[in-house]
Length: 122
Image (cartoon, rainbow, N blue to C red):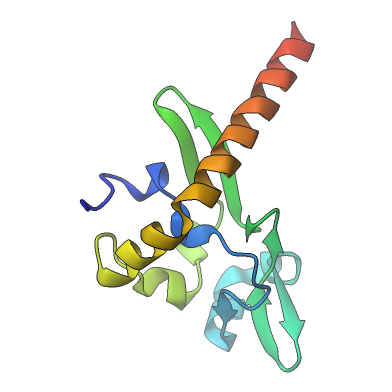
């Protein structure tokens, strides 16, 4: 399997149904700034990014001309665990192997919603 040409056309690492998927450290919380309380939650004594509709709450799925665009709204302030995941690494391939179907469904839903919104605007 080849690594994705651009992470924004893949997005699988942003998907999970686990509420404890993305750990947020104290440094991460500080880096998230004023957005931290809305994007992260405490479970027990640890903080995690909130998950919404099967993906990280910071992920925005946009419809582009070449297909879905998985856009991290806090990319420059993302948690360290997200920074450490390298495109094309064994961890990246593991994520792609286990989650590709879920991402395809999310992209299809995003496209359907965008089409419905566009149809209402006409």
